[in-house]
Image (cartoon, rainbow, N blue to C red; front, side, top):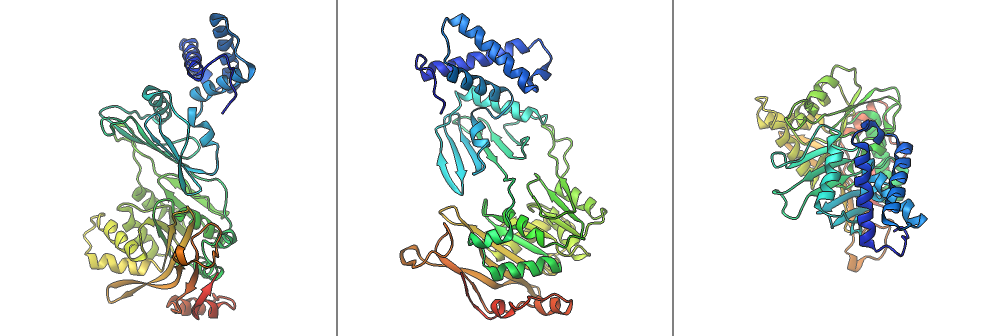
Length: 441
């Protein structure tokens, strides 16, 4: 919180900021609107407006207060307004606005209310209208909800009354630009070293892998990390609704869906992108998250030569993940029976990784299993699982910040191991660690 001139109360300072903002808008209304884009010129104009206000009021604003006020006005016009500090905080993954006076953040997996507020509902609406107008969208009673992408890549979802009674409700999902090396995931306890070695073999050898879990469980983080195991000579095409993947690979083509405008025009969905990706000489196709009928096209791609594809899906368990794929694929309405779709899933997906977020915000791979199709009955046979210890009886916290427990191998021998060995892929000297059971810190 900036230190303001003690002659001004907080209410007066808020009104002063509003006055500076309005005077600035009035001075620019008759001029070229590109003035808003020139930060230095805009900063000088704000300073001139502040001098005029001082003269009008007959009061001098302390230098520290004046600098803070000018910066706030600049953020109102160009940046994130009251959310500027939160948007600059790399530890914040979600910003949740429940009306103008209640703003929460998800920081390192834990929700916490902040002391940041908008002045009123009108202030919050001006903020929203400015952000979504950049994409040709607007909010009104006929369009009371909107999805938009912010300049930094964050996703914004907003709803306004009458859908929400206490003012606009906004959710901003931010994405980290930092890269997480696979070994860092082991160090954090998200998975064990033998699990990582198995994943390295699976991705390198071209097994199709599905990462399942709930919201903010770490699905994208894990997918980004293991992508470095894709051979450098292969061409990778990523398909996403909002580009958030940061693959650790030298040859990546990024395709991003486009939402329609308020009239629904101009929309490009994931299914359209998948069909185009099949004509782009892709060795591997990675779908950031499947949630609609594009699942059918993804499964087709996995079974017609695009081995080693990766994707994520929202699901609470490996079994639920396969059922969700089945339901989504049936939405494509291609005339295939449920049994045929099930067979396609069994042929397309070899590994399912289940990730979860614990109550303290830490994330963990809770299950890693092989998909097996026995006479049309899809099952996931666990190779590794996380054995959690009840907090009341936890004797050792093996993983930083996470719930006490350990990753254990079940002793199950995956059917794909023999096939991969025949193709020249091995687990070095780790076969006994992976297949023989036991725990891994």
